[in-house]
Image (cartoon, rainbow, N blue to C red; front, side):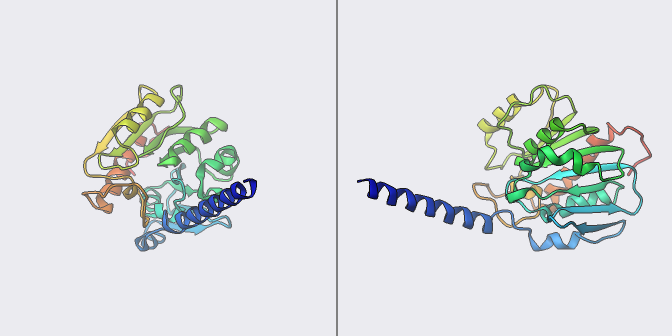
Length: 247
């Protein structure tokens, strides 16, 4: 009886490892289009030893942007957004979390950001990267002016979070159906600004190949990411510490 039980547990363990391995090979892999944004006018990019990305503007404004990736999503998937903000003067850092989990970076974010010549920080967190952003800010003494959450899962309450928050979602998001979105709203401060983009899904806030459990979008990648970039930039501008003109 014990042997049979142990064999069953071993079989379940092996199956779980196999499923996880397949998941890592399919979900969150940067789409080919992402490579097009690694170089461009007005900025340059570099990859650090741990796989993180840094986009450096040709004309820095002293503002910095951290993009926290969703669970299993590789940093290059956010190259379009990183390039867009870098071309507007933001120094952009897209950290690569251990095991492709950005939440694992929360306790080290303050030390990482101290290496940049940046006066004020802004955060974008996609999917689980949203909670990773709030946890990172709460864990360190960071000068963060505003945060944008894109289709962010929020299983833990952050109702007392003081930094201004914008939340962008799509109404075709398979990972954030109405009942889960209601829970997200309950876990965030009442002053959070919520924006819904019709036709948008979960995956198309970045450029990656596949997202289990998501729905198809009825708008394309470019439209969804452009909307998120522009809406977020307008939100951030309201909290610039030292305005230097329209970037």
